[in-house]
Image (tube, rainbow, N blue to C red; front, top):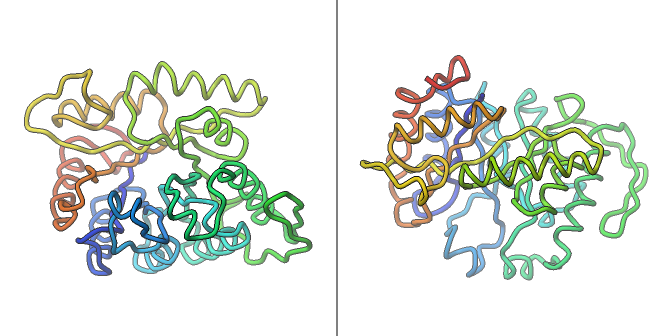
Length: 305
């Protein structure tokens, strides 16, 4: 099981220097993956949760590709309707080439209605737009000359070079807990990327429903690659009050072992606890990741200690 880090690319502690330090530290500790979040217009509904400065993820990934050498890089998650399908396909294919095949495209449909309005994208159609775009992106990544005719995107005889370094294409992780998101993961994704869930929900609801939908669609079950909240506490948290990755190191160790037993290909750790003021001190997160690497994870062998 590979383990990654959610790089905090927003808030009062974000800067080119801090982002570079995030990348260098996580790669030096042996983590396998570094992912960034996505917003473009920091409208009031975004600012309250993910405040400016916000470093746009696609350009940030291009920079990260040049200052790292082994760690995979990606998005958790790219809001698909914010950019055209052609733009997403081209930019991620280029970054995959620049990085030597280290890119993962994590995707979602978005939630910030004011940001959608500012970008001129129809909020109520975001799910349908995402589905079409993902279908079109996969064509652009796997054909030398691609054509697509849809309601929200159409193009004809587009020369796609350079295609992604990875074959057959860049892995797509689809986020979201709803049936629509699970069906999107099955139809268009290589992995399901649920975020901040309880273990009992994941085991008793999320995974069984994913399997049911895969059977309905007669398609393979996507890999399981969750993002979990990493919150280390001094004393144990009641099991009924915590999400995966929250509690003492012993509780978190048990969570990671259980995720490994469930067959997770990757687990992405996320130290953002919804407190923008805490973002002024990214070194607090770096200490937690170092402690996890020392006491909980065997990153070199891709397993739990």
